[in-house]
View 1 (cartoon, rainbow, N blue to C red):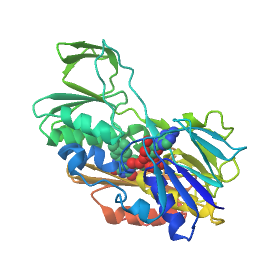
View 2: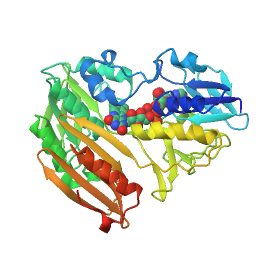
View 3: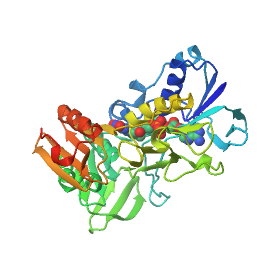
Length: 391
Ligand SMILES: Cc1cc2nc3c(=O)[nH]c(=O)nc-3n(C[C@H](O)[C@H](O)[C@H](O)COP(=O)(O)OP(=O)(O)OC[C@H]3O[C@@H](n4cnc5c(N)ncnc54)[C@H](O)[C@@H]3O)c2cc1C
């Protein structure tokens, strides 16, 4: 193998190129990215970088010198537009093409836009450095920001905006934040955390009408109440960024379909990060994970797979979130659990464990890092639900 192309210059893509070089691949490597900036990390964009402005926060994944020093050719600000598996060729938006012997697909997630128009006024989203710069400029003390969606990104933006001195309202269609994936009790705990810090939580309501007038947006809710926003932000999820692969014949099913080794259905093509749906033997089913640590480890693993490794990728999903003084950690899978138990619940935190088909499958812990390490090990060991040692 002489030429490897990595499409998607973020966490998964950069970890893939690092691993290729660390493991002795001496051929050509080209890293293709749609965004113009050097590859950077996204988690700070809703936390420190949103507070201080992205310019002040060090988020670059590697220094500018690192790429030439390691013989990596960067094609940034240049989205891939198509893939021809028959010719082993990636076409870029400028019409140029790159031939490959091995290809890593790491194009991650695209943010779900909120339908906006001249009548509704601007609705911001947060996925990229430029989104963070634009939103930071809008978050001025005393203004009222309305956040649509109480998922993790929405709640982090809410916490950061409160810390910046804004009035904050969060609109959520479910009865409590995160309740669908983490259960009602956990949802209530998050609602109380935000309410205690001055966020107005508008759960169980949907937007009926939005209208821009005099530099503000008037929002009517299904419960008959209304809000007037200076800034509106939507945090309503992401979708796998697969549009450029539409005519490639690669198998896509809510992400790129991969086997246990992260190989796609096309020869010489592996996938990693938010975009990859792979068969995880540890859980016995297919999954796609939108978390930072998975992007790191999967980028590394996909690179090794391309170099010939036979190891299956047996990852225990993990993510963290920071909201006010709460350090939130989650492991495993919680969304499709058939049982759960609250193991700790007080003003300072909550620990909830989840089970599926008789095994421990997930946990969420707030302000208790030792609990999370314990539950992570239990999931890795496929511990029966009834044998779980309480903490
Ligand atoms: C604001 C924010 C906060 C987050 N906080 C946390 C957190 O606290 N904890 C946590 O675990 N996770 C967090 N995440 C999630 C985490 O950042 C993602 O899981 C991770 O970035 C996924 O990495 P990736 O490389 O797979 O994809 P992405 O980061 O989505 O990167 C994909 C890259 O591919 C590029 N691309 C897309 N299409 C093309 C194309 N056609 N051609 C070339 N390039 C293309 C994109 O521009 C992008 O740079 C956060 C995400 C966001 C947005």
